[in-house]
Image (cartoon, rainbow over all chains, first blue to last red; front, side, top):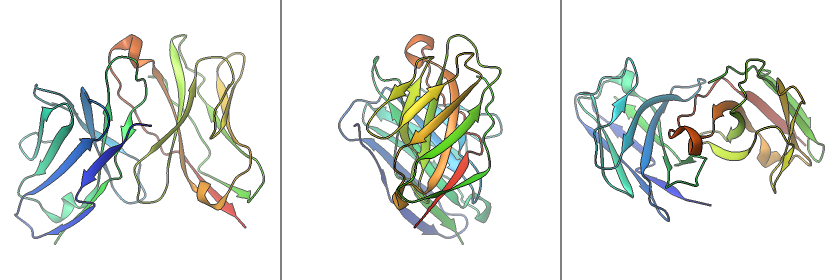
Length: 116
Length: 114
């Protein structure tokens, strides 16, 4: 099946700094990528949807100026958490869907962010 | 997309079949039933999906009732590595609708024991 990678797998940063997380589709072209957040013992919550070459669409309650999403190519999307605070500590997961014919999302392994 | 209801947790002995139920009584005619699972601290993994016919693949079988208001995911011979949270999701086929959003509920925590 299609493979999606994320980097880094975990990151620890100080409060107030910015952190970038990369999501790559390794063997297919991802026209749409999704970013989810998952707090401990909770389900995945969709943060935003991004299509290659256009601005991301954010879910209600997600601050677009805090969670910057760039989908510059068909194989790479990045999520930058700006001015991170301890409450941003979470498990961030991306997924990707390809060209017409794919009807399931392929998920990355996730990135564990801890803000001190 | 229609709402789903799943038990919070289930136990299964290793080697036995695991039958995970899902209720989706408000499902629409053009909505599919999808199953994903999430092993601890990993991203979700696609398992199977179906519209109205029963489906089987190398991972599992999906049984959908005739009225489509409920379904059961069957892992025929559960192993310890099948311990995970299993999510039942109902959505319109993105190939038809043009979008592919998944809405995750709380899922069922399946614990497979030796």
